[in-house]
Length: 202
View 1 (cartoon, rainbow, N blue to C red):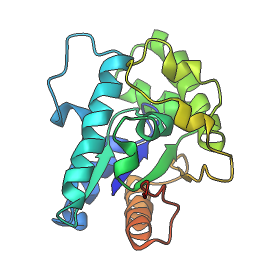
View 2 (cartoon, rainbow, N blue to C red):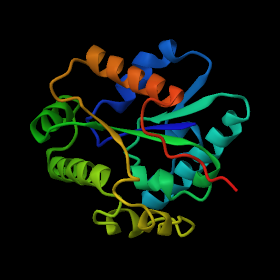
View 3 (tube, rainbow, N blue to C red):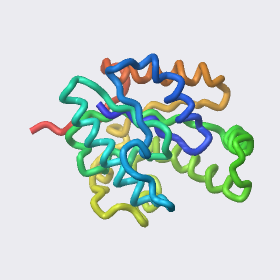
View 4 (spheres, rainbow, N blue to C red):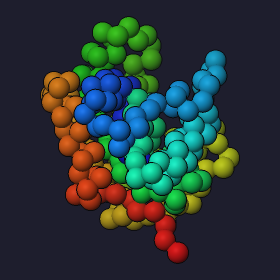
């Protein structure tokens, strides 16, 4: 299974992955995109989508060993994983780690992000929130400038009933509580108690 912890910058994805790495054990390999290939000087959306395909392919490899892949740390959107060329070969579960605009700004300021970029980060968080509710919300956000091999038609075939994504609002939570809820989501997804996009069957 591929477990995607999605979210905008400042949501806490990397912190969660680092926090729960010991708790998930050997059954789950936890990565960011940079672990799957060299990061170019100016990583763009096409690079992100190519690396997302590598993550999906890696999850398929691990599935043969009865293991799972947790992708957490990059602002990968649910639609990018579901539209990756290898997506039909693996089960996929998605959790959006959401964050309010004010909390997001505060976190990004504390870590030294440029003030001029904060509106873009906040806007992307809002888009992710809407995308988590509907697979075809403003699809150009992902498709424009994206990797040519992506299969966006898969999103067009999904109804909102099919589009089931877990959402955790990290805004009022401590890092420890956020990590605890994400760890519970992982356990629920692996055991079938949380929504999962099942692999294609012949």
